[in-house]
Image (cartoon, rainbow, N blue to C red; front, side, top):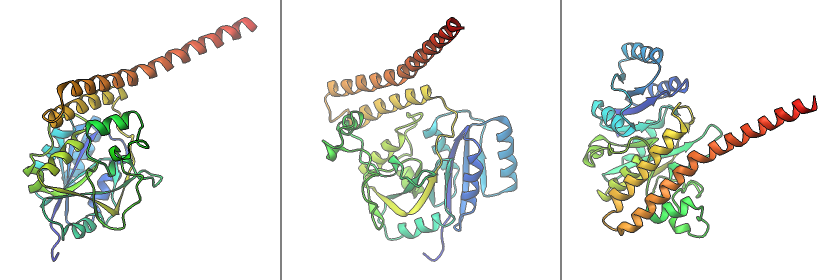
Length: 305
């Protein structure tokens, strides 16, 4: 590759926190030509003003703001439309790149047949591989096995593959995480970008499935390592769980409605909603129980005195 082309890195930020500065710096420190499209889906006013000043001072940084929280999928599409690069990299705003990440990706991409998409080895701060960076295609069977932790009994239906041995070279995988997706901009739009019917969660699995159905191949690049800090957004767990449930139901109906009987999909909906109810009720139960124990201890202490 005689001349390294421009990559447009798309980040969507929603109350990301202090790590956003580190993520921005790691993108702008790349040894390959790069521009950063930062889509502000919601940040404190003082942070937005700071980002505006950064964008004024740094021509490679473009800030898209003022539209409110339009959801992750729509925000990614907004950022991709604003990008001028031959390549797109969708990157979480709490992810830290090494300076040679884009150069490595370009070299790994050079011999591949289009359309292709590359994912990296995404790790937490302690160097542990995160679940989403290598995945199977999400099917109703895989969802059932994942929900009831039956992977040891039905290994052929595992969803997350992060515990498999790390391949020595760039290798095909069924799906990757939306926290790190590298592909040609033309190929992204060939499959019509992210489905904006997903507000948050599951849009990456949907995109991987549609990409593969469009004859695309997805690869895991083991020598591109990204640190994903995680847990920085101030979004409430209740909101996250609700959006996850909506995403899963949309995913199964959109992608498997033609191949599975409706009663199976209804059963899946019921299981997803049951999981949501348990996720929301169990913390409340523990909170109620802790409050009762605290009140009992206080009464006991008063009685002893």
